[in-house]
Image 1 (cartoon, rainbow, N blue to C red):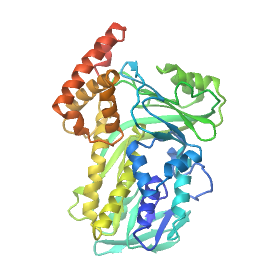
Image 2 (tube, rainbow, N blue to C red; image 1 turned 90 degrees about the vertical axis):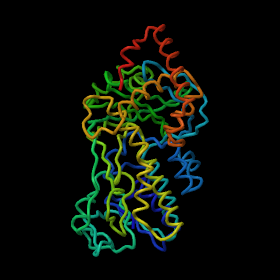
Image 3 (cartoon, rainbow, N blue to C red; image 1 turned 90 degrees about the horizontal axis):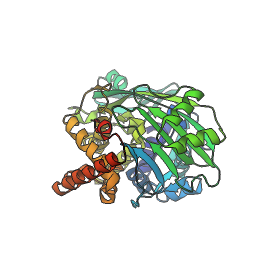
Length: 442
């Protein structure tokens, strides 16, 4: 049984369908036909990104998914050539990275995934059914409880998201709950859809402005999505995000990419403004438990919920589903082995996200060991990636979780990064960019 029909839950169901006789997917929402936002996914109306590794994982589970998404209206783009990107004092030069991604709305991805998963003859969906607890005894979970009674299962995969009540559910069965790491970031964003006209993407397919910490807090994103629309989001760290239309426009005009503000002012709005707050990133350390509950697995945001601005959540959920499938193929289910593998998947993006968040002094929580040194190196890497195409290509593959971060720490690469960063600083200084302010980050 899979609890939760979001991206992680659908990825898990696709994997389980070839390994179990019957898979039931339950969700508290009524799962409507079409690409429509869901009440149980408050972030569904905002921008979502599937990293390269996430696209790879979903394609492994459901071959042909990318092309099906494009046929449904998703927009293909090359993030090095087609993305207007600004951070660390400059608009980054466009280069060919060899990455092929797509942009889309979250509802479109869920709708296409649901259609593919529902095509498995042994998968059933039950919507409008919320999990209220777990059932089981002797250290084993044997099902879930709902408002309509109990449902038995050989395996319960908890994909109920960051709001999972797993701590309470496990405690009610006398089972241990994992340690939780929480990092408070008070991130929020507001989003509105606009009409997209022919010619809008002639220069750049998408636009993304990230702040340079610690003196900048604001971010902005414009993504083309299905239906000839722009999805435009204004966000920021530590409460600096707009709550009404006037603030939305002012936020857009404050960004270093004027193209975003032009779209906001010149294109027809199609929806009202929607706002979502995200107070903290949260990670449950199931891998540390001495006694792992049998018959129960957490997956996706139910195990680790990232700062959404970095776009890592859907990718990690898909990767965890693939990893679980590999473990099931290797032998009987070993819950502890799954959590160890999931922790390995989570650790790199968690360190990226939390480390970057701790460049702000307002961020509260458990600081990862060595975060200061990593952030100082990361700052130099940002400058180097602006200047050197080879470094940029490697860096982007690391960001997209296609390469391990260790490739950036080889001695020859470190020397190359530091030299390129020095050259870039000189270029920015000659251009009048306040490099001293930029370099305070970390």
